[in-house]
Image (cartoon, rainbow over all chains, first blue to last red; front, side, top):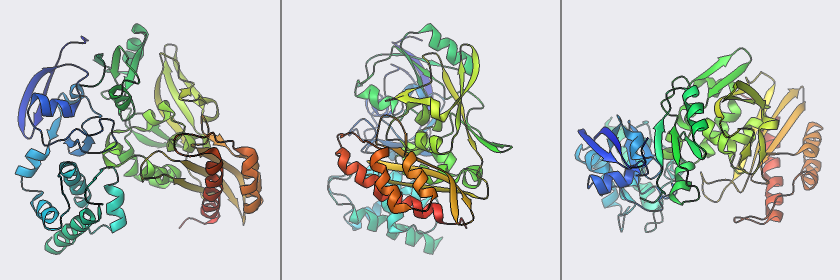
Length: 161
Length: 281
């Protein structure tokens, strides 16, 4: 119960990681500063902007609203691992084609959030897409191109199965 | 790292959590953490110990028991949204949850956390009041049950004592003649409401009885609009909207003036009155 040190073992992008951390370290700080996985971004740090979105045990979470200490035994996936797996390839291509990013700061979180919606299957309405990404701020695009990109991938995936 | 230093302990049982609370003067319970960790990051709170209750078994269940639905404190919002029991027997909760935060927040945030934190602009405390539900609490002297009407005491203040843990919430299972309504206004979907309204009533032919209107975002706790309830029961919607001026006195806040909030409360009442009048499919 020390303030100083806490041992955790978890898998990050399929690799087992064992580290000693301070209890106050958030998951996103752990990923970025301890493991050097800087694809998850730090924006508002109070759960509003969605830039720190990562997957824990298969679902997306705010990396700034979870402690690394809570991830002992968890399966954590970041944009680096999920991108390498190829499951986002069509979404990434659509974002690029439709100018669904400019500075790219929100993009990792936006992709993971969109992927969770698309994984439920079917072609969601534009309203549903907007609602689903409502927790991810983008200050460049005005969102329209992001909704276009997500919608087009949903249509493509529905067509090709 | 933004939070001030704290110690971290995992509670394995409810009793364990209560014992840890008793040992430490300014410990906080960590459930979903979607409000707590934000306040730690902003250093609005700096407890010496966080007691993580996520590992306590049995608190993540949704069960229909007779005429009631029991929802464990650690049920996540996303889990409740996917639950058949909630969809069928707790339709008001099912309508409210999509308004709570965003998908990533709903994957972590818990029903118990939302009730225990008692944010005056949060959806679930108002639902609990509208449904006349109750809260089951584990404390140093064992278990006790508190009605929703007595649970929310003030701004972020509840019947939970310093060494208490919220265990379960209980609500009446929806009966065939029960009607529900829910609406809220927020600047961005998923943000805390400017004003919101959770409502329950019983249909009697073409009229309503037992109308319960619980507003949120208009005071320190969920607020019943009793004069408007009586008017809605008579089918007098215009009268009910006028009566709100006597029921609610929303203070100005960072988002809106009280005057605008009162107007918006009337807008929501018209929407919800329509929902209450509809027979469910």
